[in-house]
Image (cartoon, rainbow, N blue to C red; front, top):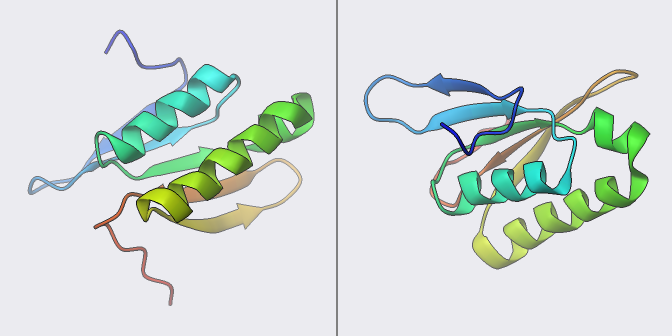
Length: 102
């Protein structure tokens, strides 16, 4: 896809399930792409926010605000998968795609 930011990994699940994308956003455009994937395409996205957290605190804060908006305004779910020195992984699923915590 020409509109896909660099560094995106797509996983297509068998049986017509949505794609799950893995992205390490570096710009606000990347974050906006994530919002589009979750809200418009109904694809879950795994985000690694470590780059934004270290390199652009303002964009990291904006990404957090957009995640909160997706949760409160659109019924998306977000779950922290891992947080360590070099990773800050969050999965965001659109409304209708359940994240099961066990």
